[in-house]
Image (cartoon, rainbow, N blue to C red; front, side, top):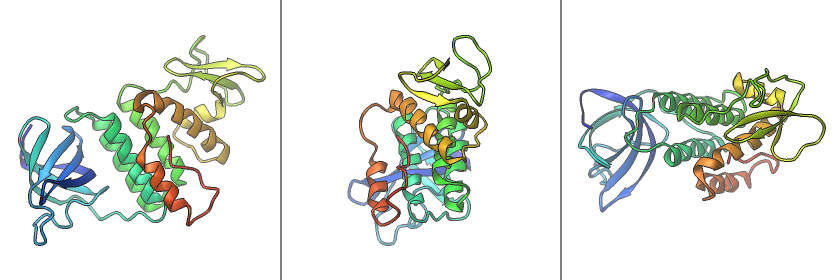
Length: 248
């Protein structure tokens, strides 16, 4: 899995210290999926990597090696530097943490690459409510990994979902129309169709969509807590107490 010649476009999903002077960088590429690469000497004061491997930033990279860890050969900026004000930084951490938990190294993931790029760009640019950006990312992530939710037709009789209807969403099956109160995970047809159309803007829809996506993602990420939620809570203490957490 060597990338030579023209550099590959990538996003820096995560980085951490590695041995005495290096960094272990998790990159998300379109053709090669997620890659773990060692940037040797990156923590030295005069390292050539300084400022080039910041989290949630686009880069152009070359690497060498096969197996779990590659060696980073070159990294250059792949676009303008993105800034994340306030809790949007925690939202970017959440997006990256989902990628780390759900995308295996070496699996081609063009859909994930595009969804990640859209999400972090929209968070940095202030496009729409941040929780709406996250719901669209979660939906696209599950679609790209083959775990997509059925949103536009009922699971039992394959009828079109109606905006005015109420549905019980059965995970790994789909929505089933109900009348009146019902047990389980219930959601309005309006929310299902809003998610399908990636137009999650109305406050009530955003709240229901969060509950649905939280339940759906838990099937694949398990019960181990996401660290980004704790980070969000720490930022939230200095801001409005009524803001929602970024996700599952």
